[in-house]
Length: 447
Image (tube, rainbow, N blue to C red; front, side, top):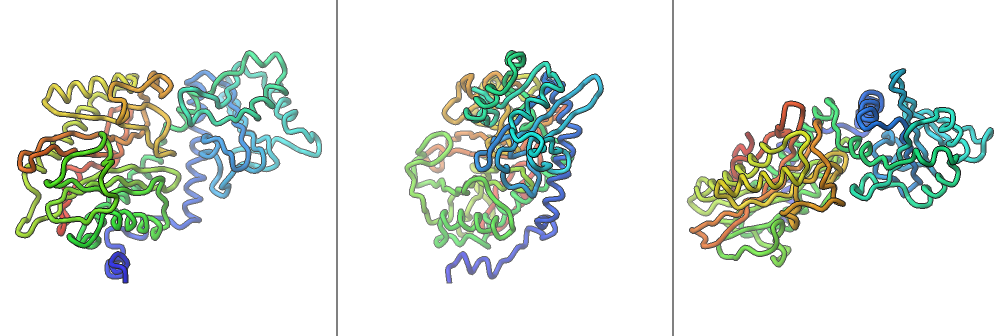
């Protein structure tokens, strides 16, 4: 029997409780309740903030606009044929119309406004709805700067413009700002749920980085990766990327770029004295996590991680602090990046920062704070000028290069944790790693 399968048999769920993860029917209820709240309370405010009174989202089955995918009810896994959603905000009357130019209602909030027997042409019916409301600004999902806000395909754009009365052509504009705000903004209830997602993520990592999964000298990094992937499946969850587990050790040079370990063998046997690193995230209730944490494999006779690795982790935490203290409402990602890097360097650290928005997508839309290959800042078409807004979540992703004289080499302390930026400033969604996991003994690892 495969040794990882043995681990599953002998060590069933111990860090996760089944009641934390809802059955499918309850997940559907929660997803739909979250959508109702977003449509009825969040969307009108966002439309007012960006000054857009009509937003039209057009998509076809199996070629869904990324924005539309976040609007479908739980029982809709895809759009149906061509699905057209129309949102019209009347700020003076404090009303919002939520209509579907489709044969069906789209969930509870979005009501079908197309009777195909009365008007066979879907585009003509859409134009009737537009003309009846006479909007001052019509937003469509096309964007150069944000890929997630660029979901309208050329065929549908051409059809829309061909049918749109000429008097409205000058009122059509990109819905980029509205689309990004819709994707990036989290509600109060979503943040309660986010705390649970991060807790589950931390628990899976804690179990993976333990003697229940890892036998030094036997278990490989690839086996731990697949253990994590299988754990997610067994829990009825999903992941938006394949987990990675890698090793730094005293006998090897630091290679690769700022983020990964290109050039290393994919499959390494884990040995005593290794510093382990994982990159792992889950998808649950239409939200995503993204987490990188570290563990040390004890050598015979050791009871704790060496002080030089403990201190190295502390340097990584300091880089986190320099970044999060510079997350100020209205600053662009490039401004935050430049100030955080300079502050960290002035403190004698060797930082690299590549923090991204996190939410309904893993690499989501919003304020990008560096990339591993763009430490001087991202270009305009990567969202350089997009400011930091409140009620948003980020993967606080970065590293600190630290020289370890005992190993006669540099190592990288690579960390990533979900963080929330609100009106009162920054906080971690569910703590961060401040202590190394040790194998074969699990220690507390969060603030």
